[in-house]
Length: 426
Image (cartoon, rainbow, N blue to C red; front, side, top):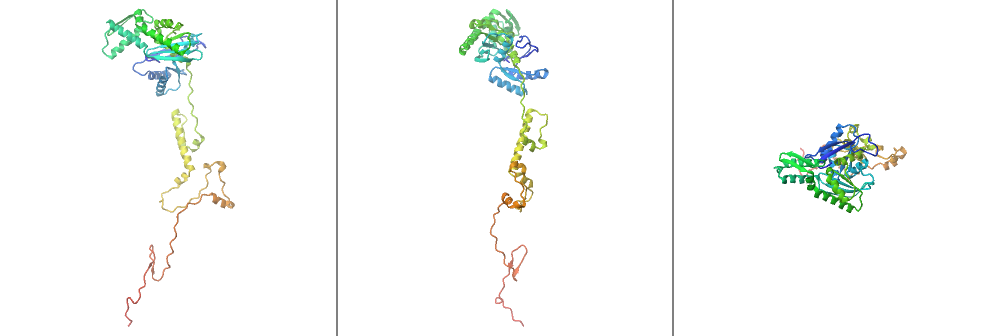
């Protein structure tokens, strides 16, 4: 997976164990055009898995931890899970060891020059431990393309493009010229701005300083790793340029191995490392969920993993809430509450102990007639009510007392006869 293209590889079946032929792969290259390379790779993998039967495993090579996070996010958006991530250096070593290209080399320099930059790593081939690794974007395939573009414009054969689209088209033409010069002595490519004409000697003179700078960087990485190396594995699209292996061998003093189709080495190595990934198995819910969950909350037999997880969590939460309510005694109160006002008198209800909310060993047996005092001491005491001293009873009604229902007794006073004297009878 590079900045310019996503490369996919699938090994042929029936390869001899321990040895792989370099050409025994189905290869596919998908150019990157204005889209995130991680998103393009995820979509390509998803389409391939849908249209190609028999693919049991997928491996994706990554360059750094940041790159790995971006790949995981893109794969998650495509809902793809049966894959694994492998380091690019490890994938390159897997391919080189499977083909026998680095047989007998215990310490190796992996020189990866692609379109976006250069990575140099010192690796122990036995343990596959990376001793030291560095990367730079100052030297890249895009930089070599820009050297060709500026040389062509300076020669007067190519007019400077007026807009960004024309500049991008000219860069693509210069990239094609660079690739053709890997096997040809000269190239002539027409364009709207003119003819791109370049010979092999002129091309090498243009890129010599850049290639020597990359060799110097590789030598510095070896020095900082504090470990001698016995060979250089040159991969990436720019490893096709014959000048690269010549300069590296002159600066390093060790053999330089350039595999066939060096730009696909990482993809083919990742395909060899692909192993099926077992999906995560969700543990069944506890027995408490089965006992307390109603039938309408039961999980259907066929449901996605994320949906099953949500259903289990929902049932568990409801079961916990129900258990807390029964343990605190809220259940009977809620079920027995009616529309009476709070001020109306209530009759305490006698309930039997619930054995389902207690441990079997602590359940109290029903009391017998001889054990009634003990049972009364175990039972919860009735609620205390605050009482006040009763008022004195009303006086007994006399002859002058009037009794009106709903009112207190009314005593009519007796008027002495001296106050209003009556005339004597006649």
